[in-house]
Image (cartoon, rainbow, N blue to C red; front, side):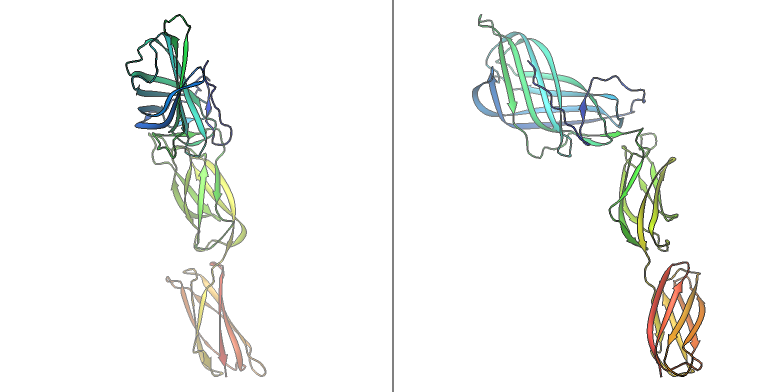
Length: 376
């Protein structure tokens, strides 16, 4: 007699189950939601034959559900509905039953249903039909946030009108609502799943940013609302991110300014002993180099100024160039100041005339920069 339940498969599906509660301790609080919902295009059928005109109906739906909850454990949804208007069904009935099914959108486009049947004993068609409270046990198989967006409504009333013609079976079904609002959101965590971390890019640059996200870390709880994940890149601290009730986090990750470049730089996320890693190809920034003056005579000095290097490191300064008679290379070192700038004056004793290039290399910043000048 009852309408079949619809069970969605896939990574975002929510399964209906009568499984026993797991040994995981119950959550310490419940989430609630209540809303007056109007369903449109409601049709009444008697024994699958349309009866009367299509109408709309408005009823209150109130929900209560524990959160956060672990996967693979039965959790009870309490659902209280308001009344259907008088005259929705045409007959007074005895030995009557009423069933209600509400289909919800979980916020990702997938749907799940709550269904229950209960006796009415007698039913007065001229009075509003008070639907009352229903309960449904759900088991969630995947972690994440589940929204409860009322999408479709289905009722049936079954009973004997006492006219000697036998029992009546009336169905009342409302078409789906478009973009329904969420009554509440439930958090589901998976205590057995390994933590995972992901990046939205495969490449990055020193000091640049990428989007990072993670799932199935130690979840935030009412007793420990400050759970977080610490992230390092190439072994250097790169940020801390708040974990939600499902054990997930996301945000903008800024790569350390002087992380060592490489094709497989490890990004490591750690929280309460759980570790997840991924890899990122990191390139170095370029250092900026200036040479003053831009044209100098042999034997005179030029000043090389390099910026964008790591404070405190000793950079290598090389001058190369010229053609013909004279010296064609000079090399020295300079210490980078706290502002990332290094300055060095170099005397071009017996330098060959022609085009030259000043190159600055930072062994700790992993950066390089160059600038051309002339000797003549």
